[in-house]
Amino acid sequence: MGGLNLSLKKGNTHLTTFKVGQVEIGKDFVVIAGPCSVESEEQIITIAKSVKASGANMLRGGAFKPRTSPYSFQGLGEKALIYLKRASEITGLPVVTEVMDTTDIELVSEYADVLQIGARNVQNYSLLKAVGKTDKPILLKRGFSTTLEEYLFCAEYVLNEGNSQVILCERGIRSGTSKNNVFDINIIPTLKRITHLPVIADPSHGTNNRDIIIPVSLSAIIAGADGLMVEVHSNIGTALSDVKQQLNLDEFSNLSKMIYQTFQFRNCLK
Ligand code: PEP
Ligand code: MN
Image (cartoon, rainbow, N blue to C red):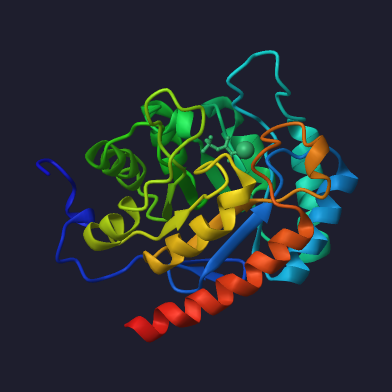
C-alpha cells in the first residue's frame, strides 16, 4: 500500500489504546449503545440508564443527523447535545455523537467525549483534517463503498494532524440494489492485522435489520472486534430515524450477556 504512513504499517506491534472515561479503548471491550437520534431529554435518559444497567460502557445518540432525505428528521442539534450531557452526568457513560461539519466541531466538542465521523463524511478531507487538530478521540465510520486502502488513508488524514486517538468502525457496505447494507466481516480481522488502531463493529447500520443484529454482533466479536456500537431505543416502533435497526431495551440486555460470553469464548480460542 504505497504511500501509507509508517504508523499503520505491518510489523508495528504497538497497539493503540486510549482511555475514554473508565474504558481503555483497544484493550477493554467497548460497548456503545443508544438511539440513532436523540429525540427528547426523557428518551435519552431512559435509554442511557437502561443500557448502563445492561453493561454498556459508552452512550451514543445523534444530534446532527446525516439523513438521506432532506425531508427526514434532521436531529435536535444543540438541544440534543445538552440532553446527551445530562444523560452522561446521570449515568457516568461517556458520549459519542456525530459531527457533520467543520463549523460544528467546537460546539460538539463541548458536550461529546468522542467525535463520530459518519459514513457519508469519511472522505470529507477538510473535516478529517479539522478533527485531527482536536484532542478528542475520533470514531471513524467506513463509508458505503470505501475500499480498505481508501479507508486507511482517511484514518491517516486524522493521524497526520497529530490526533492518534482513532477508532475504526465497520458499518456495512452497499451490495447491488439491495436497500439493506451488508456487514463486511472480512474487514475486521484484516484491519486488526494491518493496523494498530482499535476496530469496532456497528451491526445496526451494518444490517439495517434488528432481527439479525445479535448474530452479526457475535460474529464480529469472534472476528476480533474491539467493541460494538449498537442502536437501542426504548420504543422501537416510534423511532424518528433508523426505525428498523434498533434493539429494544430487553433485546440489548440479552445481547450484553451474549457479548460477555462470546468475548470469554474468543479468549479461549487464542
Ligand atoms: C449513525 O451512527 O447514526 C449513522 C448515521 O451512521 P452512518 O454514518 O454509519 O450511516
Ligand atoms: Mn442510525
